[in-house]
Image 1 (cartoon, helix red, strand yellow):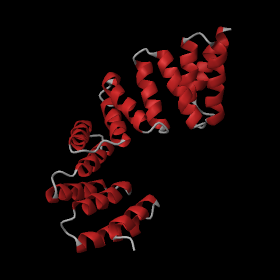
Image 2 (cartoon, rainbow, N blue to C red):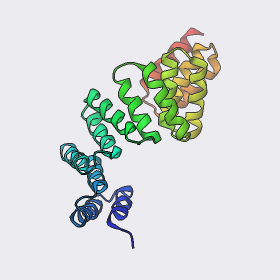
Image 3 (tube, rainbow, N blue to C red):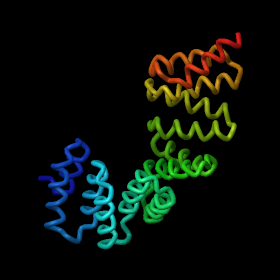
Image 4 (cartoon, rainbow, N blue to C red):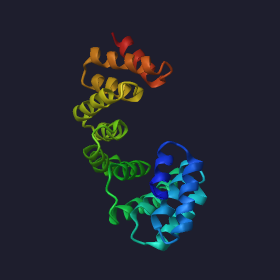
Length: 218
């Protein structure tokens, strides 16, 4: 039989939040010193938008075990949702120092640094996220955006191509591919990708505008 923590995680992954809260609550009741249970409880609260309450559980987890990096990661996510970028950055960095090093944390730190409009700082974090999880289309898209922002158009093009291979419904990736090919004076490829962006999302105004400019040029 699964323990309450494992059961709660299963429920959380299935989107059964009430059942997950019940399982983690039982775990906290039976093992009040188990810091992981507080983190898990906080994760559920965070998932349902109870951010202030979630924060309290992550803080309680750190009171039980100050070495638990996942509590800092949870706090970082809460601060990110509250648009408190400096606090989010600090918490994600603390989580890393305490051993959290999966693709998600590199992605979130990259996203946080983007809020400071410093794509150069974000770039290595998105790059690492993609190395750790090559199938993560969103991390790869952001990596491509950073490359494009730094003027590395060919490198960005290669990343956007991989994004649409992984996620054929990624309208923004098609749009950015279109722009990247336009920069490289490949009008045919540019229009092809802008059309794909509009196929996926008919009201993609940026794609429609870029297509209009390219069409009028001829």
